[in-house]
Image (cartoon, rainbow, N blue to C red):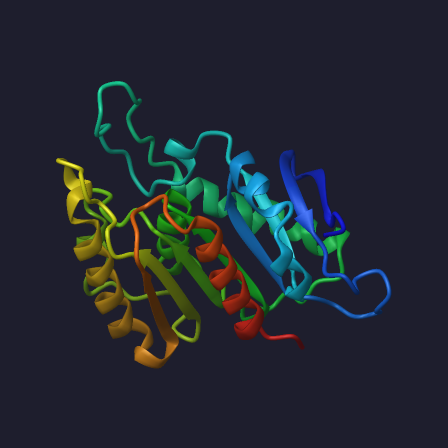
Length: 240
């Protein structure tokens, strides 16, 4: 596949940017998806064949500290060899909305309305994407792949709490063996994902929330989960 990513600094944050294949030949504006992740996300996607089918701009945001930026509130570590979760997600989402997105809209030809703007991520990146639904109306398409919904307090947080943009469309994917082998809170990952889906349906209605299951655990079928999710975005973002 012809390389279509470029690394640039946006609002003093390192990002990698994907432009659709016709971006430089067509005089039109494009939807944008903000992808939470790190260098491993880029490594997974840099040679992805399915990107030739993508018709929107991807802004891959490289998290400076995933355990802080991609968590909604502070929480103790689940394992002594890892640091505690910092819970700086509110500031991270605000930074996307007030710093990164405005600069992206200046640099590139973008469609700026919520229905043409998405947020997506895997694991903690998927957790913060769903959290964003309760914090801002900026995003009209919200994607969580193998979201870390086991995060302490997150399922209760989503009960009886209204989302900011009830017109948004949501995609959740997960493995049916997530959490298998764990002895901590992660062991119930599948149940937490089902709980989140049920709570979101009450907010968005069932026709606006899609859930997709596959066989495997948290780190299985990663490429396929990205492919399915990013192609779902291709079909659900608004192109005008």
